[in-house]
Structures are given as C-alpha cells and as structure tokens.
Figure (tube, helix red, strand yellow):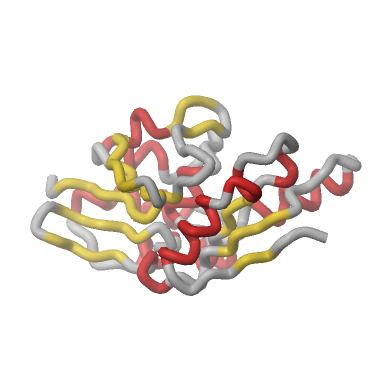
Length: 182
C-alpha cells in the first residue's frame, strides 16, 4: 500500500514534491504522482490493472488546494488556476478571443469529465488528443510552474515536449496558465 497525500495548501504540496524519497526513487512506480481531477488518472489505473501492469503507489491529490482554483482577469490578461475545470471555462465570462477554448471545453468528455477535468491536468498529461492544447497554443498561453526552488513561466509551445512528456521536473507543480490580453 502506498501513500495518499491531500495537502490543503500549496506550501504543503511543494514540500511533498521536494522530498527526494517521494520524487527521485529508482522505480518510477514509487514516485509521487500528482492527481487533480482524476479524469485520466483513474481510467489509466484501471487499464494498467487489467493488463497486469504496475500502477503508481504514491499519490499527491492537489484537489483540495483552494488557491489553485478559479479564473481571473488581471492587468496582463487571463489567469486560469491549475484546478480550473472545463465547466468553469465553458461557463466563464471570458473575452471573445477565448471562444475557441470555450468550444473545446464543451467537447472534453461528458458533463462528469467537464466538471472534474482540469486545464492543468489536460496539459500535464500531454496527450496528443488533449482538447485544450490547440486553442491555448493559438492564444500563446504560458504555464506557471513552481517548486521549493522557485517559480518559472514556460510558453505552452515549449511545455509539452512529446507524447505524454513535459518539461516538468519531479519537484515541480503547475499552478496556473496565463494568457496575455489579446
């Protein structure tokens, strides 16, 4: 049986990700896996189990971190918290330039997936079928990444490096997606 961690603050999550016993283990199965909405995580777990493949043992559930929720406009543009759901995006009062993203939000699975699936999860899974990536690329989005070592902003075009691969280090967490005012 592995660990299930559910921090209530960003600081707690980053502390867990900074623990080398949880993020730098020789066996990838023992590394801490970040969970937000779970819309890709749980089906993948079931598939791995069905094919008798090992499943991640240690989970960091960030869904309880309130500061990662919501969509807001600031002086520079629109900021999507990492836990902003597709329903939040679909129903949000966003500028017309975001109509493509709102249309994509309507196409992400059914109502249950739209209510649980997160914008950051969509990007971090780096699936070739990720509905949010094309409209966010057209909006020139950037991904805000943090760790105990600091904070950085990565253009979305550089964030996803291949099929299910990103530039995230083991101790980093996506906290927001930024789109400059169009």
